[in-house]
Image 1: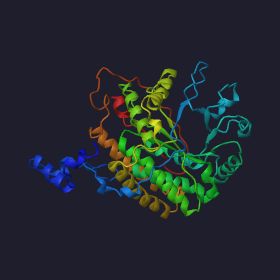
Image 2: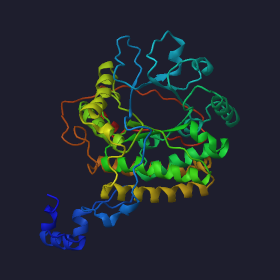
Image 3: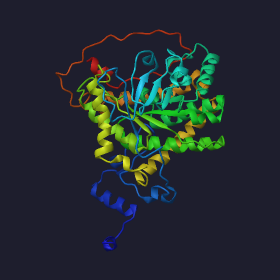
Image 4: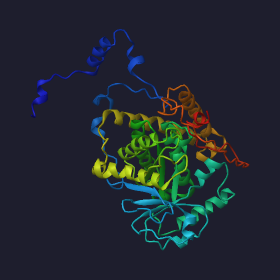
Length: 424
């Protein structure tokens, strides 16, 4: 058996390409088989060891092979926690009577409603979802009314001793607002570096990263892997060693109220990409998240991960995509392009300056408009929405609450591609 492949001749990529060119019968190779992306990366039909330095490939570790399955706390007394690793839970929920198993990791959404020190006695592993720069990006305003007060808030939470992490870098908003993969990596890096510059490199141990994964399966895998590599490289410049803890959610951008059960398939593929990209914790949004989220939807979403973990055995590998010529090539290209964009943002003064002069917004909204145009023209397809739509499927119109704030600059606002179609 070991000599089986010795009976077959190998061919070079050039020979393969020449053979394909004959089969195309006059069609142009690049126009027919090579496709471009919003990341300015052309995807080839064939990748070989010539596309990557195979000898340099190293698996990218997460904290363990067994990623954390995260759901939302629903306030339903019958909610099943037995298969969960953790819960997303609003800070204000702790002001009521609550009884959670102490083995659950708690991802606490900061809202300032309770004294955080009162939560230190909980035996659960605790992650605080506080991000003053993320709040600034999404609202155009400082979280505590001023830059100084917001920084004081960060200093206060850094003094909490019994929290695993106290700062979340909310990079998921960039994906949900329409940024391409290169932009998501670069802007999230600049976002995190703003903390290092203002609070010191040791804060890296108290940071975790939030990403959202969309439908471009292999690019999403490569995105998370590229970010891990670049974050480690940046920390080396600060003489700091720390592994990125990555919390990944499924995207809202490609979800729809039309043909709603397709969202189950989308989130399953997305959560699989999150796992293959070596996420430490994964949250799957329910299929009805964009409509009226139900307890059933939340349980189904969490058990999608359970199937990936216990029946597909994806938790048996540290980095299952390591060595794939295609994914390694994508990882390298995304990392190189993102590093250049990161440098550009730093050259205009860093993350906050780039928000204030709206450089970051220009990047994101230019990409978002291109993606929306492609969606409207069915270049980007959502089954059941702009392709194979059920004409009898009608969405009940719900008025949107308009909140007017005196923002310092244009905020970064998540939008869904399907919103226009849902109104038709």
